[in-house]
Amino acid sequence: MIARTGNRFLAKRQKMVDELLVPLGIKDKRTLKVMGQTPRHMFLDSALHDRAYEDYAAPLGDGQTASKPSTVALMTQTAELKGNETVLEVGTGSGYQTAILSQLAERVYTIERINSFSNRARKTFNELGLNNVVCLVGDGSTGAKSYAPFDVILVTAGAPQIPVPLAKQLKEGGRMIVPVGNGAEQELLLVVRAGDRFTVKKKEGCSFVPLIGKHGWKTKPSKYS
Ligand code: SAH
Image (cartoon, rainbow, N blue to C red; front, side):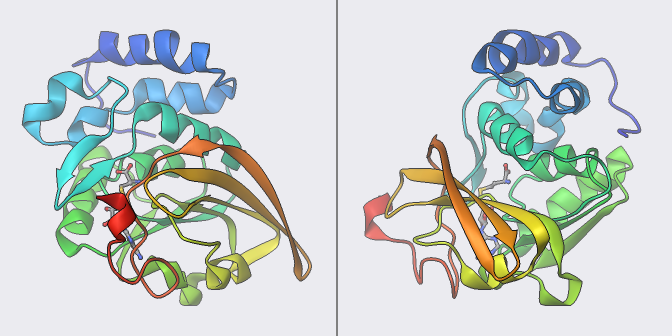
């Protein structure tokens, strides 16, 4: 649980839950509760604090953005966390999605390719007392084999296809939520493991920055610019 949320932005946070997430169809009570308690502004630059509870993808620098709150809520609800899961998140970014997952699961491994983002997020996790998060730096399109298998894998960057090594790092019955598409627009897919087979369900349309790596895009695709 969050150690020191404070009352700053409390009203804006509640408004985000009541006027954005509930009307959007977010029904999972645990998701709504932690999003109502987690200080999203602390994951963003101070110039963006006033707008931290609005539904837009906030810039993080380096052309990257933090997922907007509605996307975080949809992905979290789709993960159906009960509290005892080991989770891998690919694309730490701001660390906000990580913070939400960490309060709903047992342990979260989060991997980011940009070192400075990872360092910054780690500091915020420490400030908030979120001590079940492990920050890794590297190409998350190959997963995190030494910590596998995972109950849930959340990919928060757009992939050209389902990254196979990631799917193989799921536990039996485990699920992966991954945006897949050939440009700036993707479809959110839910991949569920049953033995050596995987079922794929299409969820909704979405728009993430590219997953760059061995099993993602090799370089930033031109379709994104
Ligand atoms: N969950 C984050 C999303 C940030 S955007 C948030 O809500 O703040 C996606 C992030 O994925 C970016 O920070 C980008 O640097 C990172 N990323 C892209 N490709 C990656 C890869 N192969 N491995 C790890 N991180 C990656």
